Structures are given as C-alpha cells and as structure tokens.
Length: 248
Image 1 (cartoon, rainbow, N blue to C red):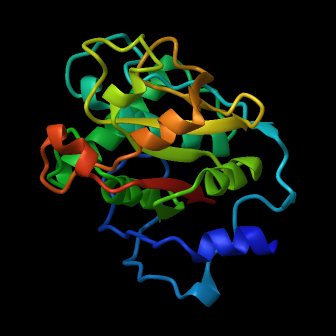
Image 2: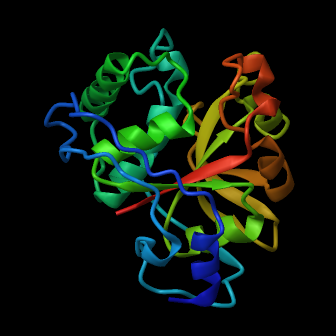
Image 3: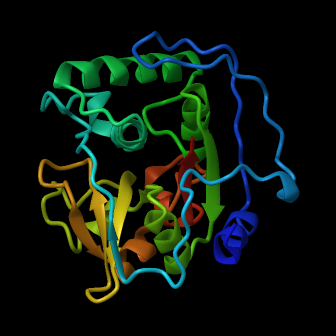
C-alpha cells in the first residue's frame, strides 16, 4: 500500500460502529451486524480503491447520481432534515452503480427513517449514528478527525467519496441557493477537487442546484463541523471537525 494512503488511514481516530439486528427491509439489503471493536492499526481494512497515484493528480472527479434530500420536493419533516440520509445514499448508490428512480429513493429513505426511529434518534443524526446505518448496509466506516485538504484529496483521488457534516450558514457564503441563510447543520459529499481553482466539487443534497457544486477549499474546510454534543444546532461551530468515508 502506498505510504501516503497508509499514513492517512492510520492517523485518524477510527470509529467502527455496530448495531443490533437491523429493521431495514429488503429495499436496502443488510447484513446481520455484530458489535465491532476498534481495529488495531496493523489490522486496518484495505481501502476501497486499489490504485494509488503519487504525487496526487491536480484534479480528479467522481461521477455519480445526484440524490436530493427531498426527491418529491416535499420539505416537511423528515425531509427537511434528511441531508444526512441523502449523503449516505449518494455514496451507497455510487458503490452499487445504481441510478435509482424517485420511487426507489423514497423507499430507501423510508427504510432508513424507520431504522433511525427504532433507535430513538431525532431528525438530526451525527457521524457516529450515520456510521451505524452504514454498517447495516454492509460497509465499514472511517471517521476522520481534523482532516486536511491533502487527506480529503487522497481519498477522492482513490474514488472514495467523502461525507462532510457542515455548518450550512458557512456554506451559504458561496451557495445562495439555500433559503434563510442556510441550515445550521448540513451534510454534503465531496466528489472531486481542482488544485488550479482551489475548489472541491460536491453533491450538495440540500438544493436542486447541488449536483457538482463548487466550494472553495478554504470555505469548505472552515464549514466542517459534526453535530454538537450539546444537541443544539446553534452550537454547530462547537462540533468536532470530522468527516467520514465508507469502505466496501
């Protein structure tokens, strides 16, 4: 394995979350999960991609279906706060090479909503909780604390999308498609980067114009915050700077 990628995999704090018997239906095939313990560094799972390019290319782009958080344009709950589920499904459909219909999206969303309700979670879920959902879908998740631009670029260059929890009001400075100045808590998926323009390309699931949207490196990195421990959305800037990737 390339030394750069190995270093990136060893450095983060890993949170591999197991959960009890899943309640999701066959629309999202699930494994029977077992409790997972932290993986020793010498037993880290292999990355999804098999080819490492170093030095990194100056630009890279992953192409995949855009998954809006409100596929039927209904912004009542739970859709109003469904950005986390949309980000997860974006990566899931990419790994499964699926281009789902709106009907299939709605079914898969509802299965996740039902699962989260049975866990006693609210509409806003943090990366640890989203990791449990990912585990039910058969993935291992890596939560990376205090990521660098270079780390994110390395994963993306390996065709590994990066799920980013963010302060939507910070994102609003470069994305005026949000209403009311942007949400306090939001999630997006990084799919590409361009060193010449100093921009990340993302699927921003929160607006109809979010496919392959561009955010500057500086602003996106500034926006990164997980759901705050206080549980108050207004404390979003107190949330940890963490991102998540899924490994098949």
